[in-house]
Image 1 (cartoon, rainbow, N blue to C red):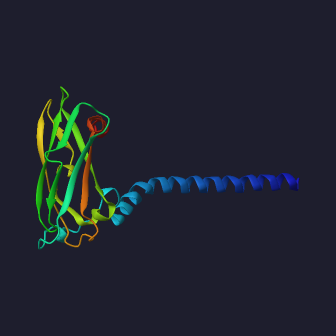
Image 2: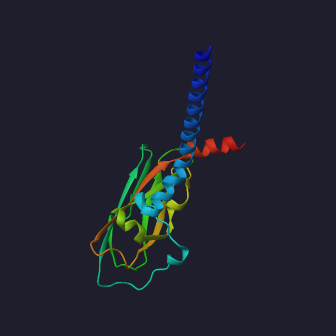
Image 3: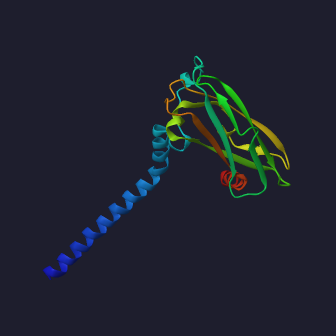
Length: 188
C-alpha cells in the first residue's frame, strides 16, 4: 500500500514540474518579442537603434570625412511591386542632413498596403544613422497602380567610428495588405 501511495505522490510531483515548465515556456515565448526589440535597440542590430529626441538635430558638419552611403532595396515575395532608390549611393559628411528619394509602384489592379523594414550595415554604424523622416515609419497605402516618390531624411553622427567609410541602408518592402485586412476584421 505504501508503494502505491509513493507512486501517486511521485506522479503528482512530476505533474507539477511539467506544469511549471509549461508555464515558464509560455512566459518566455510571450516575452520574446519585446525582449528581441529591446536587444536590437540596445545593440543596433537589424538597423534598430534607440534615438533620443534631442539627438535628432544634425550638429556641426565634419568636412574632413566623406562617407559613402549605399541604398539597397528588396521586394519580399511579390513581383507585383517595383521598389528602388532614385540613386544607388551618395557621398555625405558626418553631421550633414541629406534627403534621398525612393520610388515605389503598386503593379496590382487594387489598393494595397506596404511596409518597408530597414537595415543598416555595418551593425556598428546603426546607432550613428539618424532618420528624421522615413516612409518606413508607417505603413504606406497605395491605390491601384499608384506610383510614389518617398523621401528618407537622415544624417550620420560626427562620432561615427573612424574605420567606417561605407554605410549601407537597405529596405525590404513587404505587402501587408492581407495583414491589415485581417486586423480590421478582428476589430469588428
